Image (tube, rainbow, N blue to C red; front, side, top):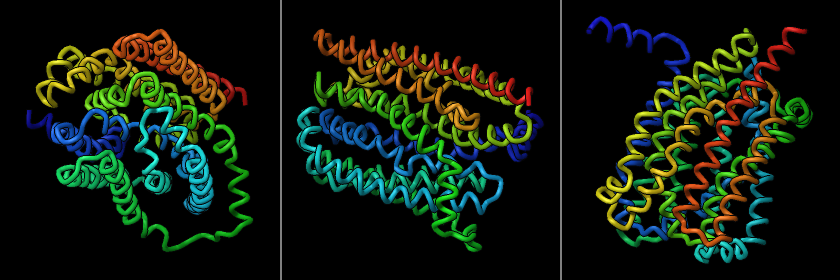
Length: 433
């Protein structure tokens, strides 16, 4: 037994996909354990309506995924670090412009959004939302630089810092005056903490700066134009297909229903996201490396990773699904029991999401952004239609959540099959060259 344990430790110490995933996921796991551990405290401080308002704000902030027009995704791809640094500066410039544009749009439409979602409080949060948008974009850029430098442990450290600061602020502020604004402010300070950790980790690598001028920025903007032209719309629609659900639920039902769904996603979704986060970041870097060196092995890498994620996810998510309502009532209080029911209904969705979503970054590696965009558009239409029809038919929120979960599960299964097909097509194209 001791010998087997020693061999396992040595395996983690050796360079490899498993070790890198562990380096990212271990830190992320700690942060998510903290989030789950703090949930019973937060749920007794804040009401479902207040958590629902925070979820609505998060839905509005989904536009943060295109803060840098996805140029941040291109940072890990070049072989030379100088080129990656140039892309990073381009991404920061684009982010600054987008922050001004998003701020202007929020000023124009925030009252309409507040009326649609039955959450007038969000009008007061417009300044916070603009700053959080900027912080999210900056954090994503610094994260990509960290990936390019293969400082995987730093990603976990940033996650821990973000979670500790966010939760600490939300608990302390909530004990004083529990409002939705305290929840949103916690998000702001959490993102700021992540930015500081990333910056400290990559600072030394920027001592020898390459030449940065307007002509160089124009060159990299054109060279990686697929990211703003294809990946940005895809990411925006991807985010909209997820975040449209809270907005539609608030419109057809209430912010309380949104809050119950948010807790279900926090309890089951966060453990799913923990490992998925590490896999996503490391898989993106590793698949880009394989594509550059031995592209014939790309499908095997994708299949093996998907199989491993399926095995990991089935048992814990199934157990949580079977015990959801009882566990939620005991841990969070009786007013959150429906959140446990939502978690049970969404179990198949969480499993399929856990298997497929972290590996979808391979679509950027194989230049399949058009296919990713097609899938994102279809999912957005399917989910929007599902929730809209349930609302128009005045179905109970439980039936609406069940329909939403089934729709999402089918979409993720389709994405898995679509990705396999694109990898095979890429391999065939490579062999004919």
